[in-house]
Length: 302
Image 1 (spheres, helix red, strand yellow):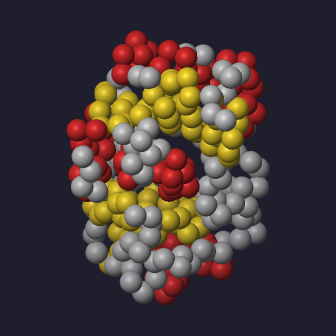
Image 2 (cartoon, rainbow, N blue to C red):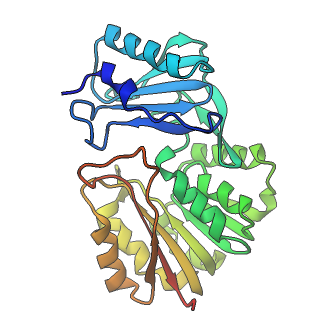
Image 3 (cartoon, one colour):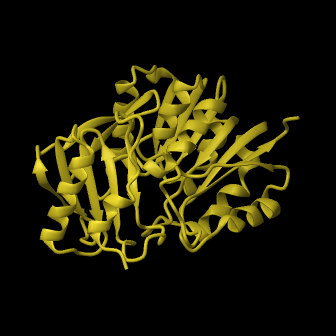
């Protein structure tokens, strides 16, 4: 059985220290006794997240151990994710609440302590990089766009245009800021505050699109139950996707595996063929295959 004091033995020390990334992922059940802990390096902040409580002296000890590995760290912060609002407190160093982190050659705004999520999901890093590498000249649709990380990556990769759709005006506002942070042309981007499941006619009007990124939440009370709702999108692909098009389908529901997407694509969109599977960074070790799944499908290309 591991304890918090063992985490420094398992952390991933990045070669590029200026890059934001997770350095310990206990949520994948790969480390016995540590499934309730994650640690992120958000230069210059180390963020420890607890999903169940730990004694303060144990957490303080972990913070000191981590700082020894990251001398450039200016702040160690703790998120109490087991509490409803997911509050954050500063354990040591500066009270840094807003920063811009680097991922590859793009930047994103991070806000600590304002919401349960910081503004960017680090496990989707390779997904954003895949989109950046495959979207040159394409018309991109970004569903459940959150703070528009995929949109920023798409424009960085030379996309012709991007439509971002999400129900949160606050998230879309941060998305605009993310584009401005990267000095990107906002005339090529749309931000649509809409319920996607009531807006298929809008998608048809904005389309056709060459690349779809669909990264839905697993469950959002009153709006999304992904086991029920993902098929509603897949069966309507022909309404808004181009004849030659690519899909990046994301699934972060612990109880739904990749077979969920494969089965529904075979039934509802059989003209698309699986071409790739994007794995999260290696630090996201999974013992039970319940982590993020990202499958890429393509239609009409030789």
